[in-house]
Image (cartoon, rainbow, N blue to C red; front, side, top):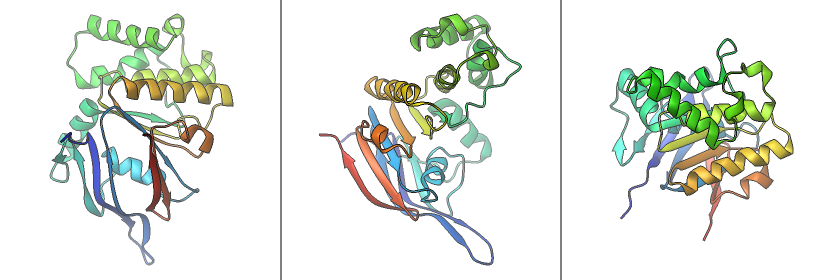
Amino acid sequence: MTIATLEGRGLTRVLPGPVPTTLVAEVDTAFPPASFTAITGPSGSGKSSLLYLLGLLDLPTAGEVLVDGQPTSGLDDAARTATRLERFGFVFQFHFLLPEFSVLDNVMLPMRQLGRLRPEAMRARAMGLLDQLDMPEVAHKRPDALSGGQRQRTAVARALANDPQILLADEPTGSLDTRNAAAVFAILRALAREGRTVVAVTHDEALAATADRRIRLVDGRVVGGTAAG
């Protein structure tokens, strides 16, 4: 049996307060290797909250996230950070590129944080990723000199900097026009075909329909899903 790269068991996230707010409720879901899953649902349904739990960016009130079959609830902050750096790549609706750095330096940032490569190796890998995404010519430009589509592709390159097996994207096309949105989703599908586990939150039903699998949330609960084949 193949172990799912990423799995949530009974994931629940409740915001405390006079009237507690449930963001995610008892979600059981697994994401196998070499798959592209779209998480859909109405605004406020818990899509992003679920993604943040799966990516170890937030802690569940109850339940467990497993990475390669290993539970993560017992990890301290340092171990969670190390797991994110080594195993996950993140793409958000807004690119969050550092404006004072070049595109190349932005892509190299996660490699510098992980600290496993020499500077020349980091530079070579970053250039390779930009070449893979058809953007070698913008390597030395600042983010404000790029188009919206180029900025988001730079964010994808940065997410891939440490060669993560799992790529999580939160509305990665939300600020893009139709053409650039389709291009970014095509990149995500290609990364899944290469063997990565790709999970994307999206409100765009047409783009979600191009994923291998779909999960639909309503009020923090899984209410449906599909799988190709």
